[in-house]
Amino acid sequence: MRPPKEFPVGTAQRMMVLLKQAETVADQRRIQAVLMRALDSSPPNHIAAVTGLSVATVRILHSRFLREGESCLTQRPGRGGRRRSLLSRDQAAALLTQHESAAAKGEVVEAGAFRRDYEALVGHKVAASTVYRLLSQAGWRKVTPRPSHPKKDPASEAAFKKSSKPR
Image 1: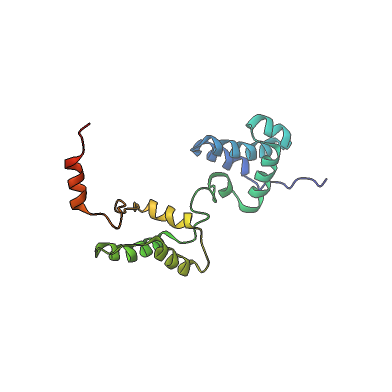
Image 2: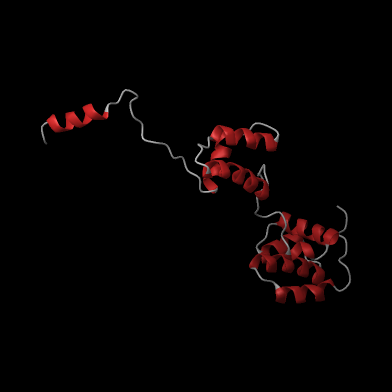
């Protein structure tokens, strides 16, 4: 096993300052893991036992600190966000406004037409649930008239109500 690389000069003092400025417990633990190695070259298993991190996490932190500097200890990129979105928020809003204008005119907006436009923007087929989820997030809902029989006669219906026995 190769010997561990040394941290830059002044790392311990800088970690002490960062430790006082840490906003979360997770930030404190990451800073402490680097600080302990900078002060007395503690082995990763000892650092892991003290900080509550895993041994693998401690080793990863040390290597990232040597590569990236102190930004890897307080700034956590890659958390949250829309990782699997096919369209950006602006594109989705533009698509919704395009179909909103048709709805404002009183036209029926079909999910199939919306899906075709969505697929044209994305460039490939998408699941129906993707389209319905986007419409739901925008506050759209399925509004349909109540079903009625095509041969329904309102006059005979009213006559039936008058002639039927009350409950």
